[in-house]
Length: 192
Image (tube, rainbow, N blue to C red; front, side, top):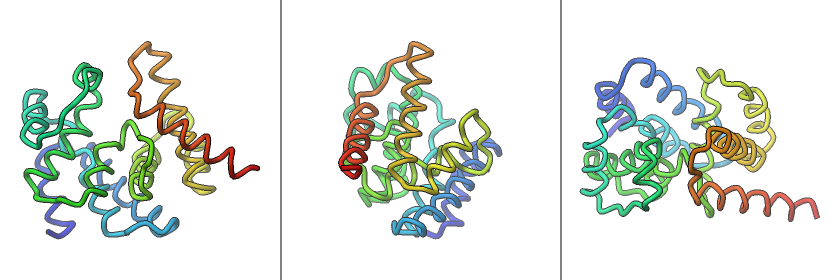
């Protein structure tokens, strides 16, 4: 399928603001992929599809996850905010026939991160935080970090996520802690 065909499919699944966000993430993912050496075509595809099920009803999301054979943890099941990333990967695999693990993992972990993230996964994670329409407090710091290094941007993004969830007294996915610890450790090793 072409990127235009993917855009057509997802534009019918979401409101115009979410579609604009998806297009912006795709554009930023392409820019970051070029900057850091990730696969540009995969970045464009994963970026446009990353929120494919964000506006899908809960029961349909759970059905997609089940149909794809994805097992979710008790924490994931109780954290609706995480569902769209998991069901998005399921949708892309089951409904669109994309079997590229890098694209699927980039979609699945774009909200939580995880240890052992590929270059593409990091690009999508960061592109989602820094897309053009984002205007949250701290976005400029995040964009500046993304220009310096993927690791700096990852630490900035994961720190933001952990602080935000902790402040709101919400559960934090273990994958998020693992991603933070891995990137923080790698950065500390580079300083030595």
